[in-house]
Image (cartoon, rainbow, N blue to C red):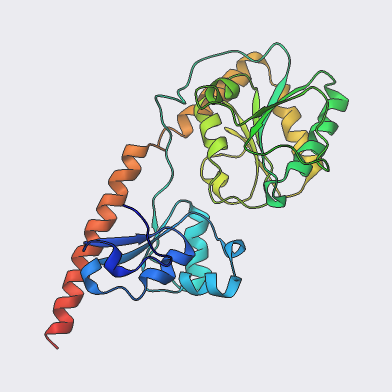
Length: 293
C-alpha cells in the first residue's frame, strides 16, 4: 500500500482486527485511531531512546498497547521502567534453510568473525582492541568481518583483517562457517541477529552482556558472556575458544547449534498469532463489558 501522508492517517488504511506499530513514531500515530482499526499493538525491537527525543520515545512505551518484544531483556525493561508486566516475548528466528549446521573442524588458521557497525554501541573499537591482545598470543589469528558501512578512519582494524562490504546473503553463512568463534562486542543489542545466525552455523559465540545475545549464548557452554567494555576478559575468552582441542571445540560447536534450535521463524509466527488472537478476544470482551455498564 502506498504511504501518501506522514503521519499515516486512519483513513489511509483499511479497517482491521489489530494494528501493529513498529517504531515509536508510528505508535504515536495510531494512538488516536478509532476502534475500527482494531486493537493496538507495539512491536519493540530495542529500547530505542536513541531514535528520537528520549522523553517522547519513553511515552510510547507507556501507551496501553499490547507490547511484543524480541528479547527477554526488553520484557524486563517494559516491566521495570514502564510498569507493563504483560509484554509478550516473540523472539527472532533462524532461516534454517540458509543458516544450517554443518559438522566441521576448526580452521587451519585460527579465525574470529564479527559484524562491523559504525555507531559506538556496536563496539568496533572494543573488539579491535581485544583482537590485538589475542594476536599477541596467537600472531597468525585471522579476522573475518562484514558490514553495511565502510570502515571509519578512526577504527583501525587489527592485522590479518578481511572485510566484506555488504556481502551477498548467500555468502554470509559461508563466512560464519569460516570462523572458529563469533564475537559480539556491543554495549547494547536489541537482539543481535549475526550472533544467532553464527551459532546456528556451529560457531561458539563470545558476547558482552548487552541484552539480546544473553537469550542465545549459554555462558561456558555454547560460548562465553562477559561484561560490556571488558577488553581483557574479551580477549581471554576468545583465546579460551580458539585454544580448545579439536574434540572440545567440535563439542561446543554442536552444542551452540543445538542450543539455538528453538529460534525458528515458524515457531515465532505461531506465538505472534496466538498472542494477537488472545488480545483480540480480550479486547472484544472489554468492549462488551464497557457497553453493558
